[in-house]
Amino acid sequence: MCKSLPLLSALSLGLLFLSSCEKEETSTTNPSPSLTAPTFYTFERNNASSVNFSGQSERLAMGAELSAALLDFSKSAQDLQEMFANTDSLGNEVNPYTAAALNASNKSIRSKVAASYELFSANTALSARIKADMKSFIDLQVAEIYAARNVAASAGKAGQIADGSAVRYVNAQGFEYNEFLIKSLIGALCVDQMLNNYLSLSVLDEGNNREDNDNALLLEGTNYTNMEHKWDEAYGYLFGLADNPSDPLVNLGANDVFLNKYLARVNGDADFSSYAQDIFNAFKLGRAAIVEGEYALRDQQIAIIKDRVSNIIGIRSVYYLQAAKNAFAANQPGTALHDLGEAYGFIYSLMFTQNPNTQAPYFTDQEVQNILSDLSSQGPNGLWDLNAATLDALSNQIADRFSFSLNQAAN
Image 1: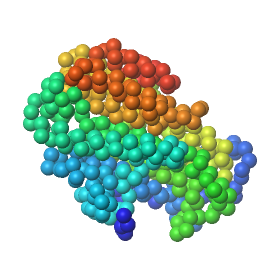
Image 2: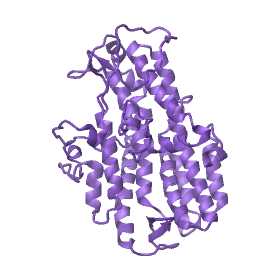
Image 3: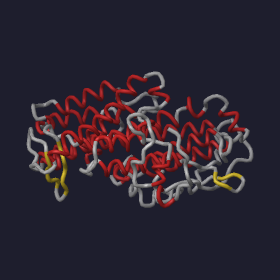
Image 4: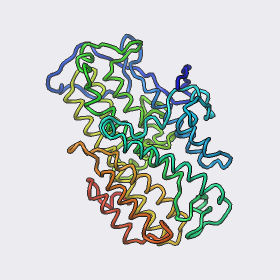
């Protein structure tokens, strides 16, 4: 697919090209003790911004439109698949979005799902299966949910069910496919691209990237080095739709259905109230370190980001399992099933995390599949049949891999 990309408005996509100070001299020695994180994520050279993460902002905006469209019962499965791929089934150009700038874009959600260098460059079969899972969630939303949308759901029966003042739509096993998809994409798109691709040393230091960065050799037609751009792209998957991407902690979580939203949720828990600032500081200092050629300092910031972002996925997995347990106990099945829909997607996302100490995911694909099987196979009615003991056991299994406790995550 080849499309011309017009100038994108900051209003429509919350973008980008930011400004600050850039490199005069470089160093590959030990990290400078005087180098500190700037106040904002703003960098420039030659009096122009050297920051660009427009592609990430576009994909996040596409995801927001897809999320809303999943509950638009006038949509067909083909409509939704075209929003996911930004092409039709034959690869032809389509215009599936309401925003003209997104229709003009040559980006797509699907192309970056399970597409990181570290996890999938040598495992294309797993990448294909994950993409197929995302496609299946979309198809099943239409096939099993749309026709039953006006029926009252119950165990073994698809339909709608109350969750407080909200209405949720589930299949006969209590599966809320729209939540499965969007929460799984937090891992399969945002976390995977951030941690396993753009912050991978195999990508940041690929080829002559260090030498080119030291010499301020810019990518053709741009104002940034390749290493600077890769770092910015990682940043974009978290902060690309912020009201002010250079100062994104103001109104945190407001514009994004993906990772940014749940960073705000986790940061609102007193046990994890430093997370947003920790991650923002690490991104700023890491980018400043790249400007100065301080690669050891850059790598220290990568470890912080990987730890905090991976923990967000683990924390929300446990949080929703425990919330579902409490909702079942309070005889609120609609709330419980919605919590389990979110839990499913966050658990699916665990395979895309990365432990900075081992450079491996906190959970393998097989371990994730085992947890999801345990979650959905406790009886003939799927999620309706879950009990407190199973939810506690799965919560502890997840929390034990991380540095937080079940009680901390469940707040």
